[in-house]
Length: 294
Length: 262
Ligand SMILES: Nc1ncnc2c1ncn2[C@@H]1O[C@H](COP(=O)(O)OP(=O)(O)OP(=O)(O)O)[C@@H](O)[C@H]1O
Ligand SMILES: [Mg+2]
Image 1 (cartoon, rainbow over the protein chains, first blue to last red):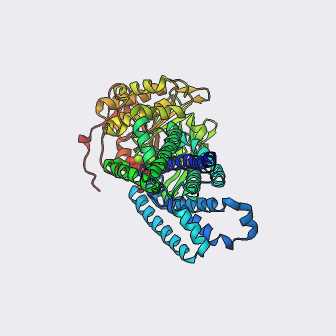
Image 2 (cartoon, protein in one colour; image 1 turned 90 degrees about the horizontal axis):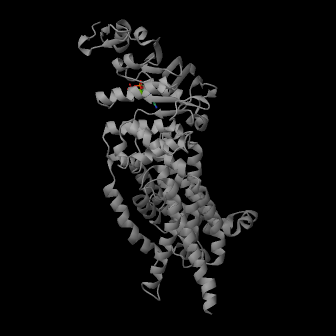
Image 3 (cartoon, rainbow over the protein chains, first blue to last red; image 1 turned 180 degrees about the vertical axis):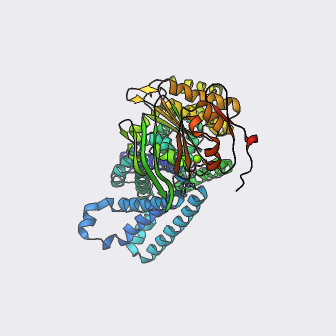
């Protein structure tokens, strides 16, 4: 009996936590490098909401898809839809907030708010259109927790998240260059366009995969890179790898905490990460110097 | 040899550069001078492959173009007019990023030597954002030097492209940075520098290109280009150039300028 619990319940949950935590931290790191700002986090600037909209749309309207397409995607339908939702969000955000290689922080945050609100509103509309079974799926998914972890879920999330992280790990030099602005990055020999495209895809896949697997778990993407920059400096080479490790550990820790603090009941993990992360976010805002407005 | 032919650039329908041709030789300092807004920075951007423009730019046998970024990074470093950096990098981390982009990335001593060259070795572990404007400018120069440390590499001469390298420096540092540029050129490297200080230009440049409203208004040796007549016409105020008895070095005192009349 204990063996079954360990194998069927605990282990997939741990694995999903590791994958999702690492992916969230890495996507935050990449996004901050891309936008050249420590406040750019998929959760804060509406990318997670966009991915969520993609996932909800897939749950509610997935039945309208041609059967051939639905069958070929199988379990991957929801994460792929979340990836597209996230992708469109980052593209929109980057297009609005960045001009001539410079990102305006104010525009980025405001556009992120608008994007998040819009995605949230459309997601709300989708809920109206859902039937009973879909509503159950949505509620289950929207809990934003690792509680629903199964081997099937791990198997679906793993390829997407691992691919996204592998892609992100190649971006160290490129993101370091982008910290100087696009022109200097080019002079340093960095293929700027390719780096930006890959960064946007990696953020979308990591965020989309994580959101599809566990709903919106916030603040990992902002806390982890920030702590690491304080510890080891802003060099993206070590930063990306360390972010994956610390993100995995942090989410795992938060998950354990959420299970034991009011046992036998369970605290939604999003609450734990928010309590941890929101103060850090405010702290960065306070410390932000004028130079941060790149 | 840097060779630009018939460069024409328009941004948003506005002509910025019109039919600009110029050559710069390795072993020399080529200065680009001209009034504010005349197109010096835009020209430098085309010469470094940052901006694509009509016409043709070649660095030896390399076609200079944004797509050639990687090949170009091994041959030339670029100091922009202004650089802002995201994230709190320390001075030495920043110089190492430049170093890592060049052809001597395996020689670990270069970043420290580049920093010492600009006289800032003692600031290696400070945060870049905490430095003064002039110190930041010199750190950026060290970053560029670290990228193309050897004036001559396996592919031929290496190049420095500097957009107003002394604009926020005190007079001692102005001279020392210009000497760094001269040493680089004398060792066989190429230097192209956008300059506002005409006296420093006259002292250090081997070749001067004067730009006016996006067109070449003169090119040649300093004493050929920096004449009272041409300067007065291009800068729109009466300027009188004098000459030091030794050699042909012209100099200019703002005190000798009169309001332009007519
Ligand atoms: N991206 C752009 N969009 C529109 N106009 C531009 C752009 N870049 C430059 N210009 C215009 O082109 C002209 C030349 O600009 P440039 O920066 O090359 O001047 P400059 O000679 O370097 O001036 P300064 O001495 O002030 O640095 C200016 O009139 C400028 O307004
Ligand atoms: Mg300029």
